[in-house]
Image (cartoon, rainbow, N blue to C red; front, side, top):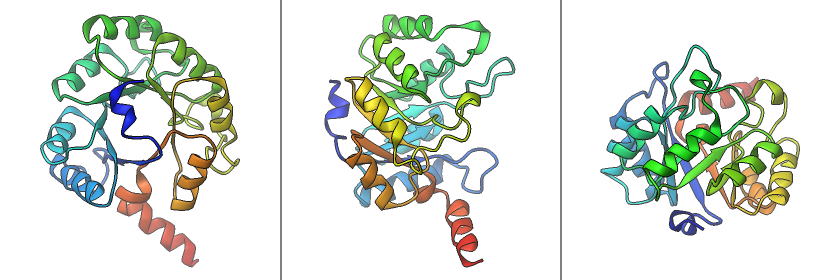
Length: 228
């Protein structure tokens, strides 16, 4: 098991992200979010973009799982889709890189296997997290040499729309845990501490929580809807 994963077992990783269209979009603000998460006890941070990661790593001493979200016209894959994003994350010194490991067509027709092979040849010591949406994708990711798999994209690919990570009592999570030997990280719709704990009880190695902690517009909306 990769060293970075050893300190995450049974713990919380906080996703500090804000896209261009969101109110808190700012590397400075994400850096402060990461500090707050660490003060609150987070064992790791997940962050998007070279700029945000550099700012976050300047202020926290927990591992940072890096991604780059970028749209490509010929593909639905947008989480660390090509070698360009990998290079950016390595320049930012991300401690682990997460990437879309689904069966969706990648930009330029690049296969996941080819990309992983190139990553490992260029950066042999890098830790890789596979963001998957199905059990089959998790198995394939393990075969390709990913260090861990995450349920990040369950319900977000065209062929898993309507599948919920938490509402089905973590059925997909449990199936993935049973199917692979690598650590399985629970991520997606982890809206309450109770759900996060249930994810661990269902076999997750650790839990990633984002919007419920770091997206105030989402948190506010949940309260507003709850009052109706």
